[in-house]
Length: 232
Image (cartoon, rainbow, N blue to C red; front, side, top):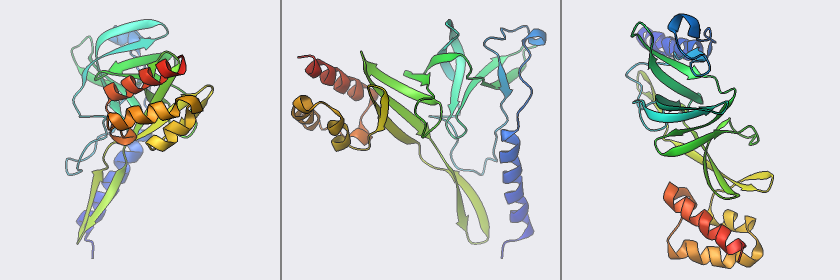
C-alpha cells in the first residue's frame, strides 16, 4: 500500500505542473532597462524534483548561444533553450541588477531562431502539432521537424516515480500548400513526382538512408538531390 509520503510526493508533482501553466505577468522592460521587443514573455517556472529522470529540453538543461529574428530584428549571442515538453522558447539573461532570469519568449512576431546549429521557425499551418518546427530546406523543397517529450509515470513497489521519455521527432514534407507527415522512405517517395521516384529511391538505398535515423546533413543532401532531379 502506498504510504502518506508517496501521496504527498505525487501531490507536489501535480502542483508543480499546474503552477508551470499559470500565466505569469509579462516581463516589464522599463524597470529592467532592457529591450521590450526581445525581453517579452512569462517568467519560466517549470521545475521538477531531482528525482525525476531526464529533462524537458531539446538536448540538455544548459543554455547555449543562439540567434533570434523577431519583427525583422536580429538578436545574436543570446542564451536560448527549447523546452519541448511545454513547447517554450526560453531566454536566459541578467537584469540591470545582475540577477539571473529565465523567461518563456512570446512567440508573437518571432520569425525564426537558430539553436544548436538548427534553424527553427514558427508555423501555424501544421495543425496536428504545435507552433515550433525545425526547418531544413533547399530552394522550395522543405522538411519540418516537430520535437516532443512526455512526462511518464514509472511505478515500482511502494514507490511513485516519474521520468521523461526520449526525444520524439515527427517529420513533415511540404508539398505545395500541404504538409504531409512522413514516417518512412516509402511515404516520402510516394509524394514525389513519378519520374524521379526511382532515382531518389536508388540514391537513398545507395547511401543507406532511413528517414527515422538520418542526420540534418543527410536530409539536406537528400533535398538537394530531389530538387536537382526535379529540374532536369
